[in-house]
Image (cartoon, rainbow, N blue to C red; front, side):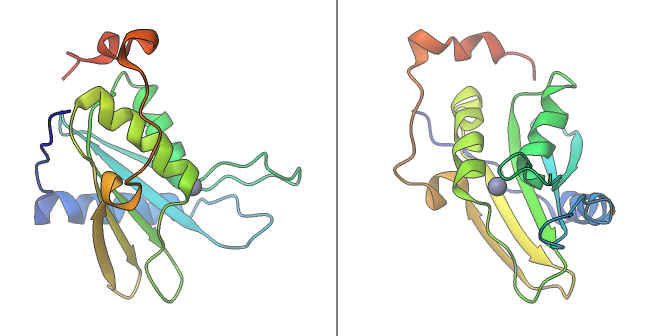
Length: 154
Ligand SMILES: [Zn+2]
């Protein structure tokens, strides 16, 4: 696996932060009342937002991070540089294990790590990467899952 990752610029981060806040304000947080927004930056330089969408049926909701990924995929984007996650709480929030595993598969598609920027509205910020936060994640078998089909779009 090739380890490469381009750092998110200050300008890109500011765009992501504003888009993530906008999405956060649309969160459908019927269970937790905990609003989270995310914005993913593709290696093509495009931005896609997501927010948490909960449901009264337990387990049926989806996190902001995965909704941002799904938004990008719906636009034909599979190669991601970074994702910013923001919420209205006291401290920056980390992506859950499911979201990390979800992102890890796309890091296999792009053959590069994905930077994760976690922040809150007060300006607190932490940075990491998918592979640092999920060092022993499940790596998809290249041959049986045809990841290469989704390369070359950027
Ligand atoms: Zn999650």
